[in-house]
Length: 108
Image (tube, rainbow, N blue to C red; front, side):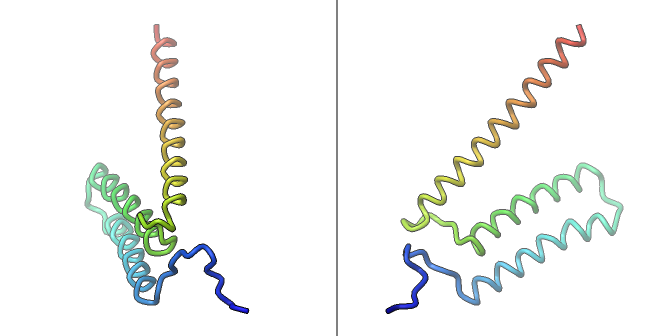
């Protein structure tokens, strides 16, 4: 009897991948935190840096810790993730569009 818990054939990360992911996560957390704590940066620049590092942080988490990639083992997980992101984007954009439309009509 085998004790292999990897029945789906998905590859798990090794120590090197987890270490790289951890270091990237820490760096992507320290950059915006340091900029905010140091002060002297414009609000627009801070919001841009925070947004970019947040997206990069999500990508690092997905690749290094959740092991999402384009391999055949991960294809359905990737499709489900993309579908979820698409649904959330449609929901958010549609809500903002409706609120903007209602606001415009209320101002008449």
